[in-house]
Length: 431
Image (cartoon, rainbow, N blue to C red; front, side, top):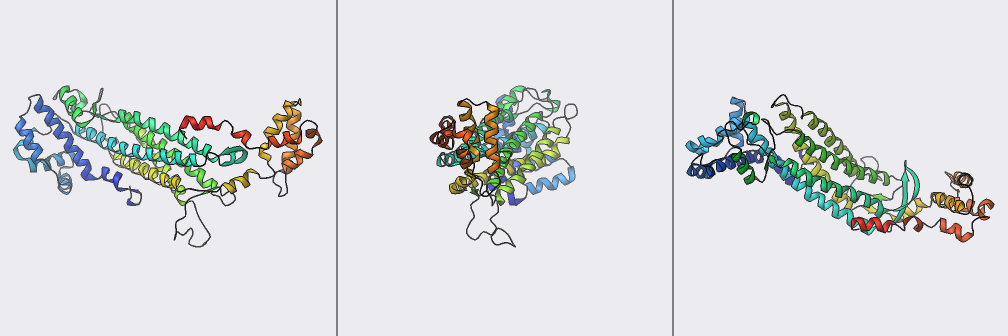
């Protein structure tokens, strides 16, 4: 991932140095397990732990010759350790190290994403509490429908993010899995007890039935869950973009002092951060497709997944992390314009209250078909006309006034009639 979208706390987890550090953690954990079971000398493990190190540049130098990254790493480590290095990697295959170490990276990344997700939950909940009574128009098909509140809109966002929180908890259990089972996974040259002890030391569980690799359905699940998080962030971003349109302008991204919106048009205040998030979601989704294609490997293993994962796993984690940090700040500093919401709500004389008038007429004895025709006629007469006023047309229609008193008509145009049950939703979400 390019530096522009890489924040240090996540980017550091996907450096070459951090990767090699996890490889060494796995190798040492296996040596410790071997020593505990009496297969290698304890003093040799102590020497390994004291001396083991690596130089990423030297590893690449060796790899250029041997064309095998794990062998290059082991060669470099043994340059530091000396004779005791002969106990490193005993009975292992490369994927024992690669897949178990990758699990450590993925768990660390997931823990960081979970922290940012918790921050997003807090930001949305706070903004929803602030605007729980801020009335606005709800839209379907992009067209004015019926009144809601901005807090209620945000409640939907909050519920969605809380579902992601639960998914990531399950995902952590799915991905926190190691394998120390040797070539093709049969434990031919190493005991399952070594795997169990080593994984416990690393905070992982042994894979139930690995081949030479951990099955890639786990990794596909991981990337798909991140793609889901990204898709939700995109939904929020697209909503902000729509509500920031000049002719709507109900919310707006915070515009910093000195910020410029356009090189040509000084008046512009563009939703650039929301647009950026929309684009990033496309990238994360594309990685989910690649992760699914990695599931089908030949027999007990091939390395067709390896080159793909070197790109998609760090990219998906780094992008999702950037997106979470961005949307948190965007929500916290979002500008909300209740007066514009009220203006849009009352467009064309309150046509959005048509269903309340319809139901009131039905309640007074009219058939639904007759009531619908009366209300639709007034609504369409008011629609898309600068002087259009649905309220006035309804109030002057004798077919309506014969059934409804002026007070009963006014009740139909009270937005609070639409909002009286929202407290139940807020209570479910702790808003």
